[in-house]
Amino acid sequence: MSFAVRGTTYVKGPSSSSSSSYSVGSTTYTTTTTTETWAQFPSVSQSVWDGLLDKLYAEFTATGAQELGASVVPVNNVTSSAAYQDLQPFTKDDETTSVSFFHSYQDTKMLSAFIPIAEGFSSNSANVRLLKQSGTEALMKFTFDMQIAIEKGKPVMIPKLAFEMVGGKNGDTFDTKFCTANIVGKGVRYPAGTITVADMQNIIRDADLLAAFRKGLQEIKNKEKQNGDYEIVWALQ
Figure 1 (tube, rainbow, N blue to C red):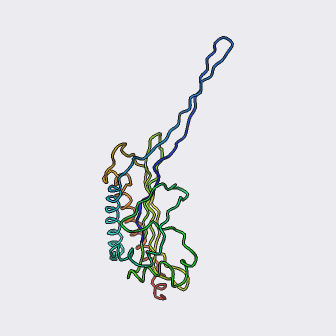
Figure 2: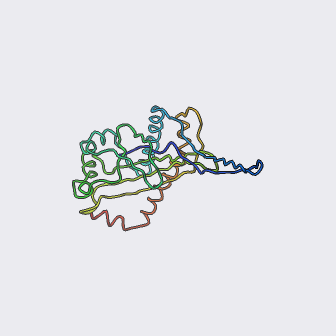
Figure 3: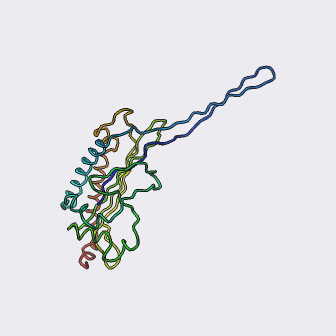
């Protein structure tokens, strides 16, 4: 449904000031020096973003399919549907990421977390139409955030992953939300010059986020097995 990377490329850090004075006769002169810190992420070509998204999509969808015992339909099955074409791409600042760029995988859209009330309820919601028209039982949304920051005086990128998987109607009003997750990695230093796809995988902590994603799905499955209420609820669908 949505698979994208977004983030910031510039941050201003703390500033510091120091003063020194000297006197000439009866006159005192004071000099104040202000030092500012800032960090800027180098320009990255579109081919690198595309290469990164290709690798991330292959890894994370394969892991999700393996852990959930499901198959992933071709992206075009979803993006070519009339319901998907009606959706408007949207990305916004949140409480931790001031968005200055975003790139999406193939024809997927960066979708807003906010949709009109008419779209969020009833049997004709956007999700329900997407599920019917694409022939799927669940929709996945991946958003990789890259937040530039200054740690111990050094510029770093802090990678984050937000994941959501939703399904059809659960009762008369609400869509099914199978799971949501937010994973935050440690800040990573980045090269000052040309950045490659391999560099981007390291900066976004690809392997660490993938391991945390897999572990989270495994924990969800284990909790479902321990809670007999799931079978009772799903039998009512």
